[in-house]
Image 1 (cartoon, rainbow, N blue to C red):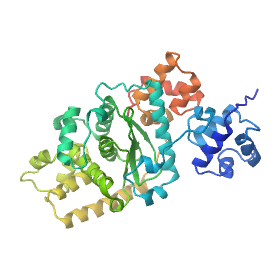
Image 2 (cartoon, rainbow, N blue to C red; image 1 turned 90 degrees about the horizontal axis):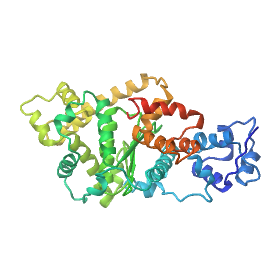
Image 3 (cartoon, rainbow, N blue to C red; image 1 turned 180 degrees about the vertical axis):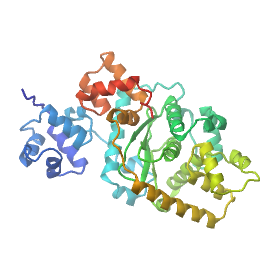
Image 4 (spheres, one colour; image 1 turned 60 degrees about the vertical axis):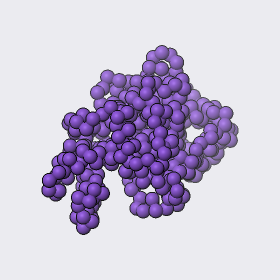
Length: 393
């Protein structure tokens, strides 16, 4: 027997419009054989109701919204990209791809989920965004030194993390232990490496899982800097975008890049390791492996410290860009395991908390699926992640 679900038509229409979709777009994403233009309009005017299966597809596949949202009495208020990313130039916000707008909405939904799951109290005993803050005239060195001391991580500990995969997991776990929740996704917008949403109690960092581990690590600390300046932000490769910023927004964006580089590769330690050493590609790769960062971070550090000249810097940047483009064009994704991928995206801490609430009968299976962004039928597969060592990558 088919179960029809009465939902708020106004919210359905709002979800479609904020996703930038026409009625024809929705039909195309569902099934043109069984869903007509009139059907979608009937749902939005509450003349008819979708089935539960249709509502799940609308929520998770078409609008990328939590299922519970469609039972709200009215559309929720949401921050605009401009409100979330005040250090991004206006012209870039205007042309921000739909995939990024969708991820911003998804991140906002996760933030609300955290408030509900943790009953408005961040579980961290030392929440870094409450304990630390910086003015825009701070030096990157002082800021990085303060944060490293707060996190209690030495250079020796950092260097002994075996590989960049382990390093990324280590830093993600470290930030989550200090009250910052890290989510990941495939952005399908290569110019963006990540972003963050500031909140006093549940700050969120969102990382592009399609990027190399070294880039993801850099993004974590670029976004951490934004949060410590009490603002949301975005890590992007858009050429010259900083030139379009003014005032504190420009200062913050420059400082976020400097902080990430200084935190991961402290200048004092870097200079000691390069004392009387020849700087060539082999040495750059050696230091990149030691600090678990990209070659580009080491190259930039050497340039900023006047250890290499502009010509050498430009030659390496050009050469590595060509190398990266060639590697990207020849690589093919395998698809991977769906559940392990979701585990990487959500992180073990979030998944464990959601299932804990379910086991304590505080939420239903439908609400649990909503928190995890999956269909109810996939919950058993997600539950298997609780016993996996790979759910916090």
